[in-house]
Image (cartoon, rainbow, N blue to C red; front, side, top):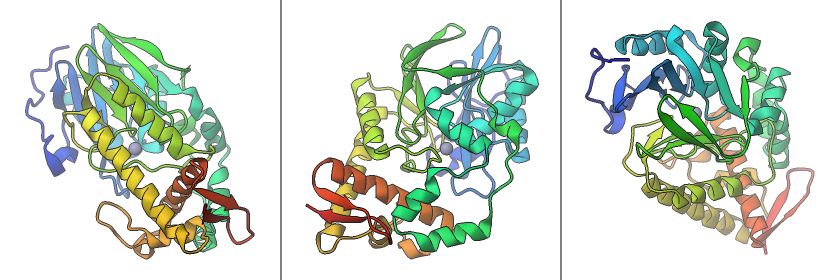
Length: 346
Ligand SMILES: [Zn+2]
């Protein structure tokens, strides 16, 4: 498919990455940012990969009217429409990646692929259950946050956003996309079924939320929880370090030159947070909620008590994930307690 009308210059420097358009990132590949209304992340990048039979989309976006409209406008810049989409390779089950792929896949008959590690979360979402998230907030001692969850109420889920994919990905596998051969690599951590897709011939990594250029992905925010999400995430980062270095095509933020450079920063960030968390429990045994209250949050170093209910919950679940890694490393113990499990430095 020829793309005479698409813009060749991308705002892939810094803060303008979310500007609407279809931004060429490589021959036959365009980045289409879709807005995320009411979400701090600004936008999600969907990548349109041209093939002789149509388009393969890397991630689908969030099924909200603004998202679909931006996708249709972006595809129009490529002389295409949603009817040209033959496949969706989704990185993970979160709504801003999966739900529009689910809807459009049904509408236009495109094949939707998703990692089988997302099956348990998808089943809980289909049943309208929060699963382990409230339990994990409970054992973190975050009753104050749980009470505020009650005020918000459970959002009504549209079942068409959360249907099963057409193909569940198992293990590491290779997917043919036109003349390209993409390595689909299972990278549990941000979610248990997260995948990245590497185009080694073109030197590109569609990294989803596994490797993000300016922020760190949330850890432990999953209805179907797993024992050590941070340990899984760090192991999956180390796997990226074992691949040849690739250009980073993230789901949020601008394209960046080196996956390896960013992986090193992310591993360092988490080692720093692990050290801060261990420091916080040295004086007194503490719950994850108490430790979260002592740490700075976001790259702007906000105080915990300035976070809203949602981000406060993310912060507590992430702190719990850090404390569990400290326990797994033999540097602390975890004791069950009614008011929230207590972590003590060994
Ligand atoms: Zn995301």
